[in-house]
Image (tube, rainbow, N blue to C red; front, side):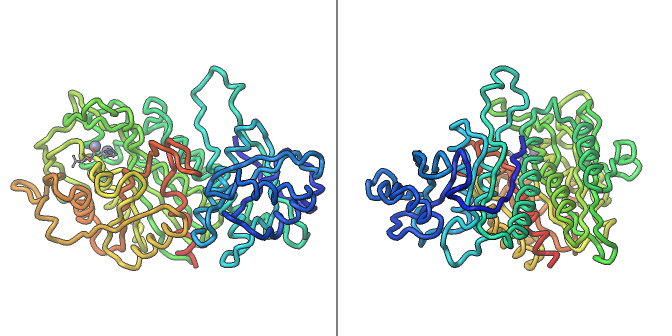
Amino acid sequence: MAIKFKSTVGSIISEKAEALVLPVFKDTKTLRGSLDVIDKATRGLIKNLLLSGDFLGERYKTFMLYSQGTLSAKRIVLVGLGKKEEFDLDVMRGAGGKAFQHVRDLGIKTIHLSEDLLDAKEFSVSNLLEAFLTGGGLGVYQFRDLITTGREKIKEVDECVIVSQKKDRTKIIEMVLRQVSILREAVFIARDLVSLPANKKTPAMLALRAQTIAMNNNLQCQIITEKQAQKMGMGAFLAVAQGSREPAKIIILEYIASRKFGPPLVIIGKGITFDSGGISLKPPDKMEQMKDDMAGGAVVMGTMQAAAQMKLPLNVVGIIPATENLPGGKAYKPGDVLTSLSGQTIEVISTDAEGRLILADALTYAKRYKPKAIIDLATLTGACITALGDYVAGIMGNDDSLLNSVKSAGEKTGEKVWELPLWEEYFDYLKSDIADFKNVGTRAAGTITGGMFLKKFVNDTPWVHMDIAGPTWYEKGKPYIPKGASGFGVRLLVQLLKDWSK
Ligand code: BES
Ligand code: ZN
Ligand code: ZN
C-alpha cells in the first residue's frame, strides 16, 4: 500500500524508467532545466507537442509521450501547472496528485522524477519537491480493504524515485522524502479510520488501534473506561454513551519529547463512531455517512504518530472521547439534565447535539495537563457546511495568537479555515430555565452556538475549536484528495506543531 520514496544520483536521460514525470507551466516559451534536457535528448518532442497545441500546460491536464528509445525512460508524463502568475505550492500538490494518478491508471508501478522539477524562483527546490510528492502520495489513496472480488485489478504505485545530478543533494532529498512519507502515513491513518464502517470501528477497536500506534511509535497510551469515567464524574460523556451497548472509551495518547519543553499542547478529537442522533433520531437519508463522526479523533491519532516520528521538540497530548450515539431503552433523552465533569449542569434539548457533550468533559479533563493551549477538532454542526461549504473548516477561539497560528498553518497546507466570532451575546441562545445552560439553541448561528457551548468548559487556556463537518468527507475529489475521507486536519495540525516548536 505505501509508496516507497527513494533517491538516486544520476542523469534523467540515462536513468531507466517506465515513466518520467515532468510538470510544465502553461504557455512555456523557453524550455528550462529538466524539460530542456529531455527535449534536446528527444530531438524536440516536447517543443513539438507544445507547438501542436494538443497540450499547453493547462492546470492539472496530463499528457503522455513515448520517448521512442531517445531516452532510457520509456514514457514521459507531462502535467500542466497552469499560468506561472497563478502558481503556488497547492497547485504543485495538485499537479503531483494528477500526475501520479495518470501513471497509476496506466498500470505502472514506478514513477521517476527529476529533483529540480521546475524553475519558479519564489520557491526552493526542496519545497517544490515536497509539495509535488505530498500531492502525489496523497492523490493515489484508495480505500480497498473491504473489497474481496477483483482485487487483482486494483492498480497501485509502489515506488517513486527521485533522480538528482549531484551527490551532495542526497541528504536534503532524503530529508524531504522522510517528511513526506511520515505525513502521508499520518493522513492515511485518518482516512482509513474514517472510511471504515461503524461495525468495524467501535470505540474499543479505536482504543486498540491507538495502543498499536503508541507501541510502534513510543507514545504513552491510556484508555479511560466507562467505570473510571463514572468515578471521575464525566456525566456529559457518559450520557451520550448510555444508549449504546458498545463500551465507550476515552483514548489518551501522549507524546512527551522532553520535560524541558514544559506543559503540552492538547489536541482533542470528537470520536463518535456512529451518530444516529439518538432519541432525537436523524432522518434516514445519508445517515450512513455518520460513520465519519469520529473524524476529529482520527485526525488526532494520525497527528500524534507524525509528531512522534518527526521527533518534534514539544510535548503533545491527544484526547479522543469515543462512543456511539444510539437510541435505546437506556438512551439519554431530551429534557435530561446532566452534570458534567466541570460541575456545570446541561439541559439536553437534542440528543443529536452529542459532540459538544463528550467534548465538554474532554476539555475539562484536558486541564489536568495545565496545557499551553488546546485545539479541538470535531464534525460538530451541519450548520458549518451551510455557512462555509464542503471544503472549509470553521474555526473559533479565545486567543488571537493561537487563531493566527491555525490560520497560518491552514494557508501553508492548503487546508482552508475561516474564523467565526464567539461574542458573548451568542450565549443568550443557550440560556436554560432549569440548568446552567442548554446543549442547543435555535437554528440561528448553529456553528457559533456549538463553539459558545464548548467555551464554557475552557476558561482561560488559549483554545481553538475547529468544526470540520464540511471538509472531512469529499463528495467530489480534488486533484490530490480523492473523493471520500480526506484526512482534513492532519496536515494543518502537523504544520502547526512544527511552527509552534520553533
Ligand atoms: N455529527 C453531527 C454534525 C454533522 C451533520 C456533521 C451533518 C456532518 C454532516 C452533529 O452531532 C449533529 O448532529 N449536530 C446537529 C446539531 C443540532 C442538533 C444543534 C446538527 O448539525 O444538526
Ligand atoms: Zn449529532
Ligand atoms: Zn455528531
